[in-house]
Image (cartoon, rainbow, N blue to C red; front, top):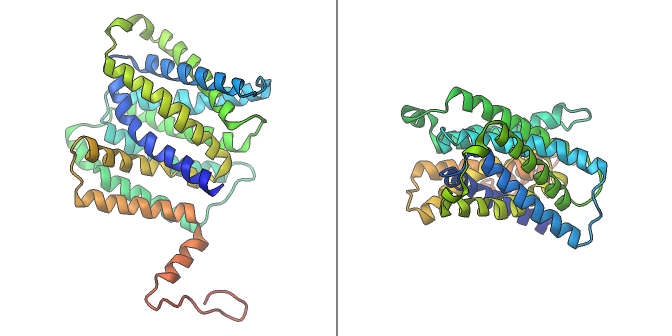
Length: 318
């Protein structure tokens, strides 16, 4: 289980860190909801066919209901908000707003009936992670040149709340079947919904497939294959395998991954400011994922004395 968790988190962290750029490239010659429709219909169809070839039973009505609700919340509203906003908003500020997802996840998971109350370590991790992202993106400097328009900002906030709600709902409503099949159904539902919205907005009439650039097709292919089939399937599995607080850490790590990729492949400079921000984000992820007891144990090991804390007669640390 530990190895599967590491691999799944690694896929979500690394692959989704590159999708902001891929979405931007796809929008060069595709309208936003048309891009989403193609991406999710292709990815969902391929993934669903693969599950059936491997012997999965046809989904039940209950599975379709959960997939329809979570697919609409997470993909249509959540991911659709990001695609829509990137038409006019700087991707760095879009990423900054999306980092509110971990906070919404923790709060929704806490406030739901029978919810889990997070400990102080989780809240400290959320605060440190948010500070790291603000330091990383420097919204004050970014706002001097360009800002997120009010409409896009509002849609992004709704999208983050919707994604968090769908993730928590998916975690606590298990209706049988594999998480891979659930991801496929969610993507199929989202693809149909994206196509419907594109038709209502008049996007389908605007798109001329002959004018779509090779760069945009490659971006859509990358989003479908890696962003959806690989990383999204891993994310849906994680909704069942880990806590809401840990699940939301992807929103902190993705911007760091995007910067690392930019430095490696686009010659972007990694400044001391970026290194400090990355360290804060890493500390936040460690605090949220390790939990209070492990963090305290690590601090005892790293203490100057190196001897840890003494124990009282009742066995508690003094």
